Length: 128
Image (cartoon, rainbow, N blue to C red):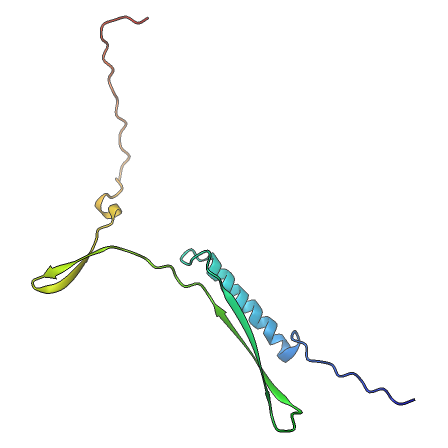
């Protein structure tokens, strides 16, 4: 009987470079989850995690290659904060003034308003 050649063990992603791909995945997933929880981002925005494996042969014999693992994320951006401004001219120069917010024009009172008591007048008839 001829000696059987051992089957070569293929590279496993989980073991490649001491598990760097899985480490990248975990870190990227944590970043995505934090971005989803951030109330300053759109709740319905799609987030992406990209793991890229780049393999480059080292010579013409094609018997070895460098392999690099990269990870990138695409997170939701911060929601815009909108305001209103009025545009005009002041002393001949262009000018803009931000509109006052209603909360600035009508601040919350420091004290609670006192209840108003309404007096009921009797018309002199006895309804009882």
